[in-house]
Length: 243
Image 1 (cartoon, rainbow, N blue to C red):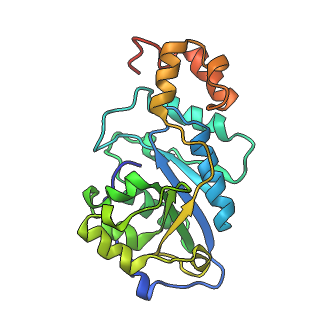
Image 2 (cartoon, one colour):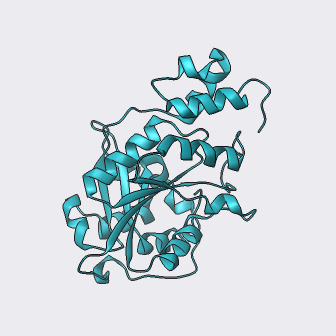
């Protein structure tokens, strides 16, 4: 998922519906170009910290506000599937990669809500993505449709001084200081979770592949072995590769 657009509006936090025991599922979007242990580790950490049923990983199909990925949509979905194989708490959703339409986060959230009514969706974002929310289409509607989980790192708090004025207003209206309170709120809230996982980036992984050659031997600490093997066998991210 890359940006936000909405076709439906839900109630704000002050009147958010509260269900007796809704399904609570996380959503982590991204380019996953390639997926690495930081992605899966963060998803697993938040799933356990918040007691979510699972976290759905959604590779962005057609980005709007950034350069196209180096690996194709099928390749990126294949790598995500390999990275989470055997982990029932993590699940691939490839809906954005099955269409040529531009990928908008809210379109995906609306589709997920329609497919699984009665589910409380928790959208996982990093600090940079959170701070950029005002540039997303219909971003305030997006905040009405989900509970937003901002993933920070210990020692690097999210500062209100970094927020755009409109984002600060939404933050002050929706923020829950205690993440445990999220269990009874189905949508419209914002919480912070300090994620204790390696600070990795796909950009760095691609650089390592280009300079090191063998992702199986060089990237063991940052990639799932099956993903490293896939990159090696398909020649992804090598100099001259433009997929």
